[in-house]
Figure 1 (tube, rainbow, N blue to C red):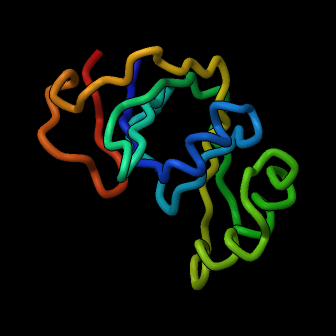
Figure 2: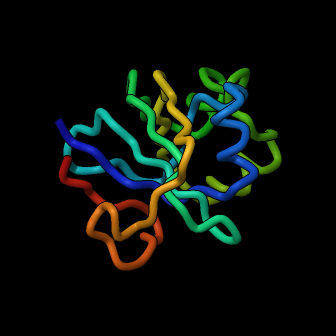
Length: 124
């Protein structure tokens, strides 16, 4: 089992927790096969607020990935296009079994001193 911690903007974390956003987009794929994601909500929350299993990982051109994921993306096309501007590959982690922690956790609960820019592998 491989887990990662992802830094995600609070507005998108809220959409994930409400089930409106089941795909988390990234510009590059982790080298290891990821099957669990811990969700770190960035400023002003700055806590690990939940976790999700990874149902599947999609990769392909940004236009192909948008067509597959757009209905559950939790973002608009303008945001998506800007995110992948000048990129040839898009990655989408399909989330399932999303759990929101009743009491958010600190990074040091995971042995991490500072939030990752993109992601960080977690030993669980």
